[in-house]
Length: 166
Image 1 (tube, rainbow, N blue to C red):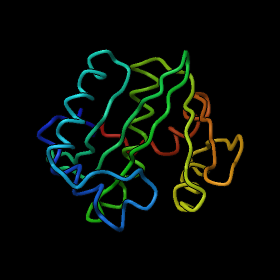
Image 2 (image 1 turned 30 degrees about the vertical axis):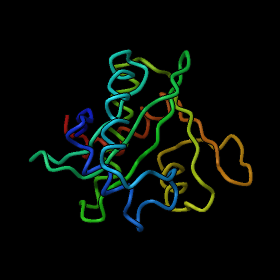
Image 3 (image 1 turned 90 degrees about the vertical axis):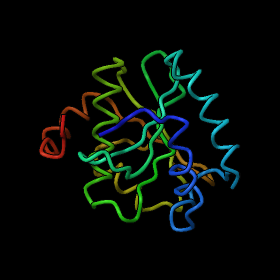
Image 4 (image 1 turned 180 degrees about the horizontal axis):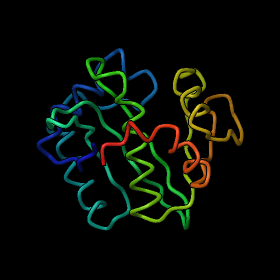
């Protein structure tokens, strides 16, 4: 499940972002907890405007398992990233959180597609998105760029419906 991030989540978020096994493919961040808290305070303003959402991925017992963010809202498209899952999280956390992102963005916010990029070296995540049905639109020396249309998600959703805990 996804819950919106709050300032109280700063320590957990920072623990993921500073984890050497997780942070190879995300932008660098300060090690300072106060800096993370300030970022979250500023983020909450964007959330109030419904221009960005930052989520904590949680299990049914409300234990934090990771993070994911949706942003860069276009007319019918959104981007998502900052996707980090704790090494101690159950294996199904990645698929469950991706499905929750698409459920929220396609059915609650009404977007028709997603646009996003993945670092070329992040082969595991590239393969994940390809298995989900995302389409590679181009590459550059740093990133692979994808789009994922709602219609494709609806087909994939049926395959993974058992992972949804709505």
